[in-house]
Image (cartoon, rainbow, N blue to C red; front, side, top):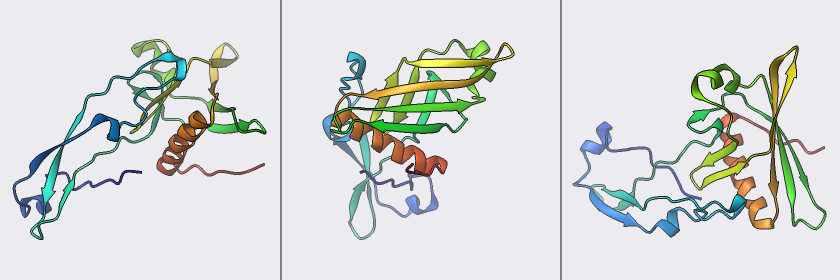
Length: 179
């Protein structure tokens, strides 16, 4: 897992640093999951050019800014409601399902102005996990709950999903409770 160095050349600390040099990182190292087999979509991500920070001790390290894990129903619009998540996994561990339940999601507040719900997108620094299995439940003619399902068909997809959930739960204060 990458570490976050958030002293991004704008603090007073950065003024005491020597001249930063450019450092090219191969895409395959930073974006290990850029080719997603889920739904057959290939993600195209540009190679990163990171700046090296040289301290007075002569130590060099790249400055890496990480993406806050987020969930979206409309691309570009983050969902503010924290979901209830239920996980199931087959006995042999080859597949599983995550069911996300959003009670009074914020997407209903803005969907009329921004656009329609196009899917379920889980975004972090590794890339995007997505599903089109999204259902809305209505009470008295008004939308109140969204249920989204994400199906994992291999141990690799399960591990990738769990990495996303670990990041998302740390960022949003979620806790795992085994039933």
